[in-house]
Length: 370
Picture: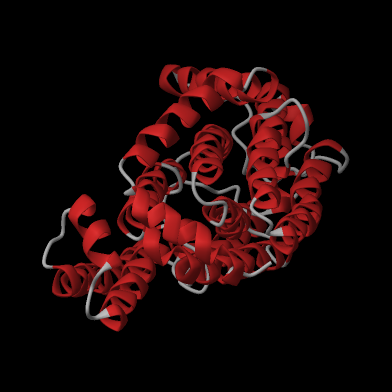
């Protein structure tokens, strides 16, 4: 039995080791302001190149603009601004500190809803607004996807804090999703939409379990705090393990078909090396996810008092866990309906792309990185 003094010292040490909420919020506010400035300046430059900010007029104007370099600069600015929102490398520096300092329910929301909205904006901007520039922005997205996957997974390997590990994991998943953007146009849109739905379900579920286990004071933060958790909270441990397996991409989970469709779309587009990098990073991710699973099921329980052993699961949390677990399971065993909806959305987006832009894109695809 550890003494109360030892427990207090351990809690103070962990409190000093993590960034305070004020520091995290200021960092997110300042860097977010810079990213928004890049995004707005990119829109202004796109207006200067085409004379409009409407996506349909923008797409037609870019194909015949007299200032293509201005349009390319506008595209780069927009990608930088959205890259921050989706925490893609090299615009990810805020993610680990903000995720670690923010409460777990807030992180669960931040890592899904804003990122899904930002990816939807990126889809519209690239696929509908800049289709004639696809041979140029596809190479940029290719590089960002590879950087995000390796930065996220290698960074997560070195983390002991669970939330910080999941922060780096979110960077890697942003890279997986960006792989779909290189499969222009229909396959990329459908696979990106499916992956977004699967990632939202499993990530919200994982952070909901973490909130219920550690409480809103979040005393349980490191992997050591979760040692022997299966004996204390078997149901919540099983749910967390299920969501972690889905994040790995194990069959019969939504994460498996999400990665399957994304990598298949990349292969159909001829991006073989990008698909191989994705598979390699999926293997790297197994180490840190399975490390947490091994701690919960294989290591002896520690009497630290950090895990809420007898705390009941709140009704809203129970509803959220049920919904996310069922959604993750259904996306893994019956994905056809959601995939059909994603394909119908892709068809609607395709109709908004001028035929001239698609023909020019098809003629220029030989310059894409393979």
